[in-house]
Image 1 (cartoon, rainbow, N blue to C red):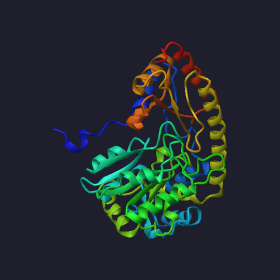
Image 2: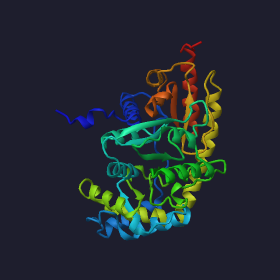
Image 3: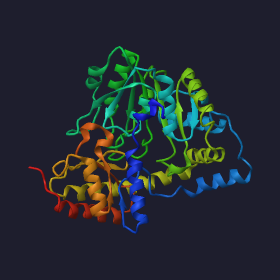
Length: 393
C-alpha cells in the first residue's frame, strides 16, 4: 500500500502533456509542442566547456552539501549587486534545481495544518509540495479577467492565525505577469506586519519585456529574515537538464534545508556546480541571455498577434517568461478536454489551464520557446481545428 501523503499528489500536467506528445511523435505524428517549460536554445558553449574541464580535472567527487564555496560566494555577490538582497555566502544553499530548493524550503517551514497562501494561477508544483508538507493551501485568485496581478488587499482577506507562508512568483508561470515595485512593497509591508514568511520564486527574473523591472521582495527593509529567495540556472542559461538552483535564506532556515538536502539528494552534481560558476560570472553569459530574450520578445509578439486572430480567443502580451495564457473558454471550458482535442486533431500540444488553478477553466498555456516557423504553423493548426469545434453561445 502506498503512503497516504502521496495519494493526493497528481502527476505534473506539463510533464504529462510532453510525454503524450513524445508518444505520438514516436508513432510518426508531426507534433508541435507548445507545452515545454524550457528554452529551445542550447546551453552556451562556454558553460559546457567549464563542465568538460571540471570532468577532465577529476572534479567528480562529493562536494559540501550546501555547494562549493566559490559558487556560493558568486551567488551571494549576484544577489547583493543585482537584487539588492543583503546576504553572504553563509546564507546560500546550492540545490539540484530550483524545484528542489522550493521543496526543501516548504518542507522545513510548514507544519501540518499551517496555511500557505498561493496566488492563482500558479505553477503546477506548488500545490503538491504544500500537500507533501501536510500544509493547507489557500488560493488567492488574481482575476483571470484582469492582468493576473496579486493585490495586497487580496492577501489581507485570506490571512488567519494559521497563515505561515506566502509563495510569490514574479515573473509568473503561467501568466507572464510581472509585479511592479509598489505592488511588491505593499505585499512586503503586509508580510512584515503579520510575520508571514515568503518564498519568492524568481526563476524567470531575466526573461522580462517592455522595460519592466524585476524587483526582489527580499530587498525591502527588514524582509531578508522573512524571505527565502529561490532562483536557478535552467531558464536564463538554458540549463534545464543540468539541474542547478539555489536559495538564499536566514541562517536557521538554511541550516534546516541543509539537513534535509544531506539526507535526500546529498548535493548538486559536482562538475555542474563548476559550470554554474562560469555561467554566473562570465561576461559571455550576459550577451547570451540578451540574445535569447530578444528572440523570445519577437516570438511573444507573433504568438499573441496570431492567437487573437482566432475568433473568440482572448490573449494579452505577457510582460515576462516565455508563456502566453490564452482564454479559449468560448469554445470549451474544460481545458483538459480542449488540450486533448488539439493534440489528437491538430497535432499541437498545449497545457490545460486547470492545471494552474480551478478558476483557469477554458485557458491554455502555450510556450513560445520554439521557432517562429513552428509558432506560426502551430497557431494556424489550432485555428483550423477550432473551426470544427462549436463555439458556446
